[in-house]
Length: 499
Ligand SMILES: Cc1cc2nc3c(=O)[nH]c(=O)nc-3n(C[C@H](O)[C@H](O)[C@H](O)COP(=O)(O)OP(=O)(O)OC[C@H]3O[C@@H](n4cnc5c(N)ncnc54)[C@H](O)[C@@H]3O)c2cc1C
Image: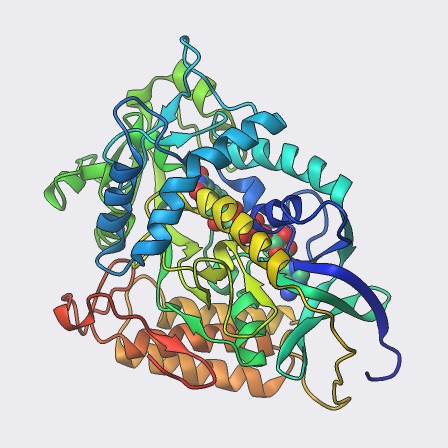
């Protein structure tokens, strides 16, 4: 170990204190020492507390796990892993019951059944929710439970530590210096990558660190070309955009052009509730588009969507009174660190779960509500495997002069990365735009301390270049059609660069 680096040991190291990481912590053996490392400060780090519309579970009388699976496959455009989807739909209800038992207060109908939102890609209403602040309610309960179980360290994991090819923990940059946090098993649960783009619904912590850390250590990453853009973010503001939940459209809000004409039914028979990629591209192509939530009614808007109504009002828009401008924004990372259905990555002792993992559940497009479900189902699965496969670890050796995978990044460099990604690897890409983005990222990377963001961005661009077709959220205007030869195939980058 290099000098001046502190050392902590635990049974399990969990990197990322969002829903996937903390749910895993709650499912590790009670006698284990668990350390959660998280770079977020304040109450709202990570996407989990921001989730609005709900968690997908086949809880309605007209629903079933097989219908949930069918909708997930349909959205995923022939790219979902069947065994992963099966695990998701089979275990969703049990996870929901566990959350309720812990105290999550989801909205109920008069007869006591769950009140369900219908969102994009769902053939029946399937999103269990708590008004329009589902993530906040879930995290209220999960964070309180996790506090009893795990020690939290504020810091950014900057590299994965290997001991003879096995993951031994992570190096963490904290305000008090560097610490090697060693564990018998390590979970990456660091969330998505929306903050690599100029407009995003994600918090600033969502910088793609999962793929950067894992790839740097030699693990495979998969499906990185699949970045989902949410069609209805508020079309005003800076990098961070207010999300106008899909459930608004499920409740009757419509999308209109500058002349007030509804146009999504001309594009897809499901209109406002067509898959997100279809809606997002149609809105981007319209140039100017607006969400008209008035059909829901002012009283209903204030009761069912109080947080969204307030967030829009804080930004100067009244959802109850007039259509508000909308624009697509980077929202969800479908790809990530390649895992099997038990959370194992290609590095022994290293696991991944939640948005940073590529389990194959979402394929090329995510059905709304499935990411909260994925975080709990696969967070628990990872915890079970971590328990079974834990091994004692030595103290790994890190060369003093070797570069960490993740380093702090200045505002100017961030602007360059975000510009490169938005103009080159956004909602609509081409070979030319992706190559330009790669060149820009290489320039930024060489200039200073932007290694992780540049690595993550480059993995997204390289994967998007590999997939010479359009499918789901990946749209290449130079290859606008889906190619049957790509059905079921995945772009995997890693040590062997296999696919
Ligand atoms: C506005 C919004 C609304 C959404 N609505 C819904 C919805 O209604 N339904 C649904 O299913 N999904 C929704 N999603 C998606 C869903 O919230 C996320 O996919 C899910 O919560 C991800 O959970 P996670 O635990 O994987 O990651 P996160 O909750 O993002 O947690 C990751 C944590 O890792 C930490 N971290 C990152 N890098 C490092 C590092 N290098 N070192 C240490 N810590 C690190 C971060 O600080 C963060 O706390 C929404 C997302 C957003 C942004």
